[in-house]
Image (tube, rainbow, N blue to C red; front, side, top):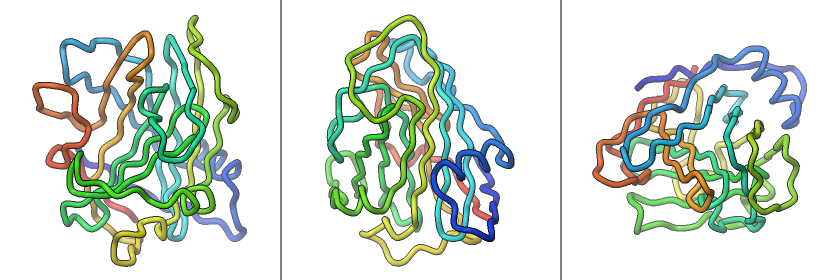
Length: 216
């Protein structure tokens, strides 16, 4: 899988609401729709748009699913157990990647390392001050709700949150990444990816299956 990430320019500083509008208007839509494991056949509708603005990554997810859940509110908590979208990126292609995991009310889990087990958390203060997140579901926790729901989540990730790497310049950068949708503790447990994963059991922490991002 290969994705070209276009630049969106603006003469003024753009907040997360403005980034959401500009992504709607100018960025290309991509699907997260690969079911890699037969035991987990539920497929929510998940799409995303991505762009570069200066040295920030803009990312917007569009989700429709049967059940939603948002219990976690603290940075680096178990957001993957809620209705969750994820973005894993190896910005320098050196085998170490950042796993950005966002539940549907915008709680952020962010760590760094070469695999599932050897990970270092990014400081919660860096997460809360550096990453801007806005969800159409708001930011207050709730237990699972059924009946079908659609929600959107917009994120601004400045490259300086890659604190365990050498300085990252996004312009003209080629890197490795994958995008996911999960909900480990929802009634319809699911594990969906953008780039396919050829493992026996669900495992998003497999950088050998990342696709390629090419930033303008």
